[in-house]
Length: 228
Ligand SMILES: *Cc1c(COP(=O)(O)O)cnc(C)c1O
Image (cartoon, rainbow, N blue to C red; front, side):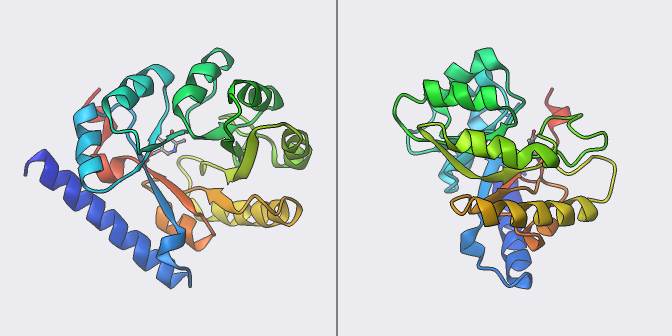
């Protein structure tokens, strides 16, 4: 199979599974945003996805993403979901519209400063790990305080929470816990309507627990380890 057919088939499989999972959960497929996580994949693959109608792309590294952004059409919404390094934020702000991995106040402060009057959309990453915060994300116990501080900053809009399920464990208990944390969060921050959760291994489960923004890489583009 050539690369276009391969990506096209993977993408339609994923879209079908998203639709079925949404319907099964009593939700409208249209309320779910699919972000193609394109980190490590060549620009050609992104062009194929663009031709197939994708307009939401997610990247983890500033330098790699900045190059791709220049080569692709301007009607793409770029998401950043990688670990944040303070010194990269200014550049990330220049190409990304949505930053999913904000877990410290000083990152939000920097984003607010570099946003250049445009409204930056962010998700606050919450840790579901044990030990807590070991792989990024704020301790759920500190979440409300952090969000209250961030909500006072200009030029930032809090879209909701983001989380990554723990590795090497069934995702269900963690995603169920995330839904609880998210419901409590939304009751205090009414404008935070969204939930960024669900990757290749767990997106159908994530949909059943309320995810609105899925970040999917390998199910669409294949195994990243093969191209490194
Ligand atoms: C790489 C990555 C994804 C996509 O992972 P897949 O398992 O390839 O779908 C999603 N979210 C984050 C934060 C990532 O780093």
